[in-house]
Length: 256
Image (cartoon, rainbow, N blue to C red; front, side):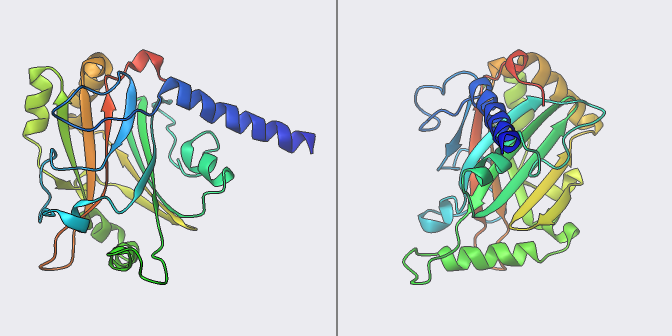
């Protein structure tokens, strides 16, 4: 119908606005030219991040086992933030579903005052013929994680941050941070049909300093986050994905 077509065009234009306001770029990582200002991108090498509990030492274990689809940074209402980012029609998860994406989606939704960062990654199911080394064990590890309680998920999922470029005080702030389990930030998890969303309110006094940095200095900073799952006893932890955000001008971020 014309109504349905109009809604579809509205949804598409909303995500198109996101891509214009905060585009994707490519970057090889530390050691070369810095990434494009006011952009985000995927990192295949997480060696620049603080090591997780049992750091992968190369090979398949060191490569991300999810495909990063989108990183979105936007402004929202501090009193009424977007809590179900997967379901929101103007955000990435529903955009990719409308484009035919059928893989399992993992959504991470950080809320920091009037700002949010929503990351979407996709998990491939292992091929039946075993043609992708390690894919079956990664899928088993992920499914064990999905079956855990919320508290256990928070202990199993770890995040590490690093500053690639920025003022000395920011580098010192992040240098002191180790890879930490996400449960420290009291996340909530939503297990849905073919997706998992984790929502984190960064509202502690410790995070208020981060908010000030974000509001006033993010245009001077290139930083990154890496996500790992704790491996079984005696095995290495697994990298889910890693990404960077470069020199973000918060005045250019769209309102959702």
